[in-house]
Length: 359
Image 1 (cartoon, one colour):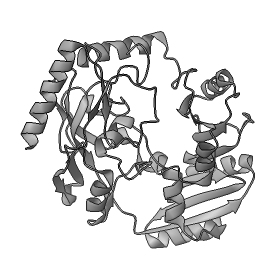
Image 2 (cartoon, rainbow, N blue to C red; image 1 turned 180 degrees about the horizontal axis):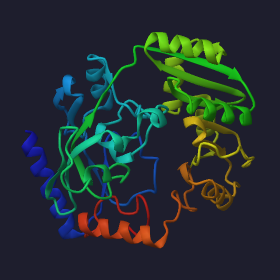
Image 3 (cartoon, rainbow, N blue to C red; image 1 turned 135 degrees about the vertical axis):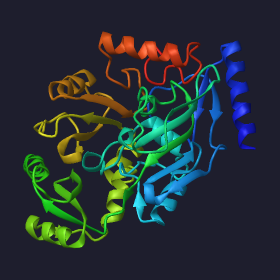
Image 4 (cartoon, rainbow, N blue to C red; image 1 turned 90 degrees about the vertical axis):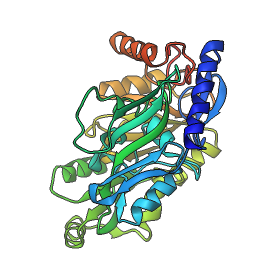
């Protein structure tokens, strides 16, 4: 059945190549809002699911791309392990393949690594329908080009992921979340100061005058850090961090329901706070800044500010994407992207336009 599914997919890809019919690659659909709106006929990948191999002693799990993310996390949790990058789900249907293709990381990212840091190998079908494998199922695999990590954040423009091998981390023995009533400037200063110290910080979030800091690790270390930092204990820390991770927090839901655009600004953690014309939620020790903006927000100003502070600005959610979702690429980077697209999907049938019009 599994081999038959892949054979069917290969035949479909080759037929689409012959007819030059673009395909819109789709896992669980929980991230359909992200990126430009791609052209083409929907190509569902959720049917190809299931955990292929899981060795908790080696801290490695391999699963088919259509496997629900919750299934992967439940299997790991049963062995007291987790995905280091705290994968955003945005809905119950999130799949492993869609998570890797989107390349998005949650609150733990600056302290435990990004999506690309845990991907060991992938199996995929390129735009010709060829079945390709890159990387492996062991952490010490270093042969060849690191194509597996190239798939992280490619949004399905280079291939249809069919199988992914990722490394796991042990679950922390203890966690606690402390809250502080602070100004935004003082919050940025403190999280950068704490980040430079041997403290078990695993997440930070500033919103509406309150800074939340999560501590994770051995119980004595968490207790000592909590005593040292002070603050108040949040009533339900896990629920709070899930709400931030999955954009179920009121900051995000109010913006979505109110029709505002949601911007994602990735900058240096030490970048000073700036009045950019809308409310902000700040994560990652100051390095990730979410902005709920109206249609009148100056996108050019936002992107210029992000570049001036070592980063970029992405139009994460919006009804009108005419200003472009992603920052325009410099000519050298655009040339590299085009060459990669030409190599993996020469006929441009895989999610054309999902990232940039050029590919």
